[in-house]
Amino acid sequence: MYFSTIRPRRLRQNETIRRMVRENTLSLDDLIYPMFVTEKNNVKKEIPSMPGIFQMCIENTVKECIQLEKLGIPAIILFGIPNHKDEKGSEAYNENGVIQNAIRAIKENTSKLMVITDVCMCEYTDHGHCGIIKDNDVDNDETLKYLCMEALTHAKAGADIIAPSDMMDGRIGAIRDTLDSNNFTNIPIMSYSSKYSSAYYGPFRDAAESTPQFGDRRTYQMDPPNRLEAIRETELDIAEGADIIMVKPALAYLDIIRDMKENFNLPLAAYNVSGEYSMIMNAIDKGYFEKEKIITETLTSMKRAGADLILTYFAKTYAEML
Image (cartoon, rainbow, N blue to C red):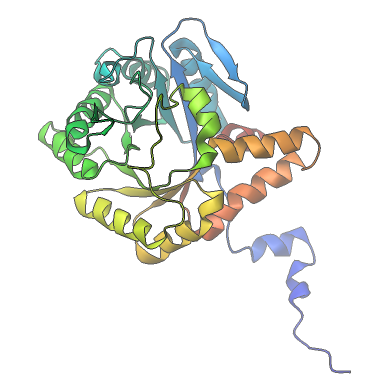
């Protein structure tokens, strides 16, 4: 009986040779850790649907950031939870708002940690939508003005990267113009260029207290069945000045990550979102998965698909595993 002389198992015999021929490697340098900052004092409150992830006051956020920097995590992304919400999300662009004050405090107490800020209105509006409501829907062009104000206050506070997640048409160009005209030309924009209207965001909405009070976000976030639309959206964001592009969510959209990698040559981020995190953590808790193996395999799948950067709630756990 014929037996092939080509034996792929020769290169799998031990860990050393597997490591030598490994096609994709996961590094701490790839990871960005999302954090939820509340304006309330003396708070470190675990999010029930996201075990191990907390809402934290600014003081505790700073303590956590000092630890993250010691662990070697290069960057965080901040989401704010203000005490006051209104129809125009005024705390989003308050120069002394929760995120603006958190940026300054983190920068004063860390030396290398990159601070990325989410730019959106949903955490700050009393209706929970990502912009200004008119005729029972988000008014795209009116919202751009407020997003630009928010981005500018983040830049003034010391943010290293601005990350608009709202999915308004034209927001990258508008924010780029605002930053440039205010002498912030060196601040990169990480665009949520392919952000889908996904069921995987449920735990995040608990964490950020940003559930829409009516309707949903399907008029501005992308329709999950669409693939070519992601390319069109990303082309527009690049043309408007995006420096980093993103796919969100990650696990159910690995094909989109691959499409982005094959079509564009900008740094590519993938957001390993709250629902993905919670499912895996619940399975680990029940003993269905081995913790270290499943976390590493999950994050590596995103690297293999083409992601250069991964926003993930597993970042701290992964750093502690090393």
